[in-house]
Length: 90
Image (cartoon, rainbow, N blue to C red; front, side, top):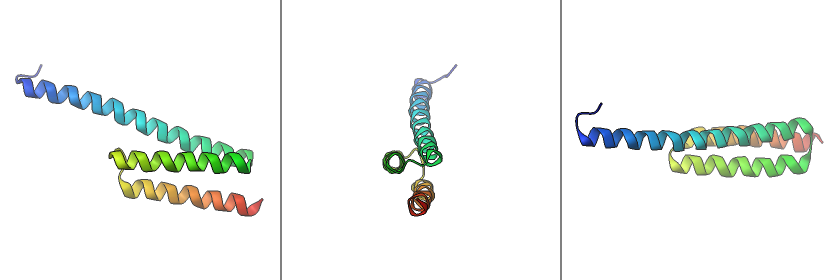
């Protein structure tokens, strides 16, 4: 148990932040999985819409500080490379 009230408040805040960050990371992973599933299905329309959604989520999460900006940019770059390959091959 925390001795000081500020320590207990800091602990409560960290739990709230942890729950929020877990939600955003989960949302990001789901968006990437949906994009990869659309790639496997070879549906051009679904691939482009899921890519746009994943990019939007990654940029939002990076802006909130859940992911580092460079990590989000790297992931977006990899997804866009996959998108361009999929659109060029079909």
